[in-house]
Image (cartoon, rainbow, N blue to C red):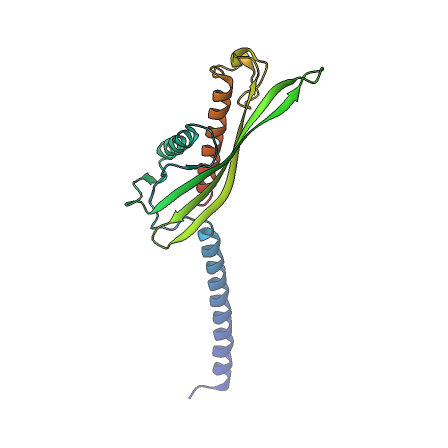
Length: 198
């Protein structure tokens, strides 16, 4: 027979053990939630990037953005690029708007610089669980002047703080260059958004 003193000792230690066990369980659960929150499901190891839909009149822009996105995923090597029939996730997109707007003016109020901005709706889909992992609108811009030579237009066309001869990648037709810059920015933003889900 257990004495009353031993029984009290056991009960007190049992309570301490229970409290300690519960504290460890809560801390572990909290850490597990924190580390798992925002992570890509383990079954997703590949992505399909079908040709984007284009609701604008911009010719070839869907191909450019699709190619840029594919290149960015290949460079980062975070998910294998697959066909839609094989991929565990699909990144679909729709180009909803392309706008040109005056951005800077000269002293006599003539337009010096335009900004071309592209708006793109993106949906990243988990094939196995049939759920949307990411749904968001992205936008990117590029600047261009009215001269035919962007290497001598006085405009920071790609927003890197360098102008004309200071910037060794400013060359080509102004609006096309601005479009390519906007496309690259969008692709980088989409990739970064997915990377922050890990």
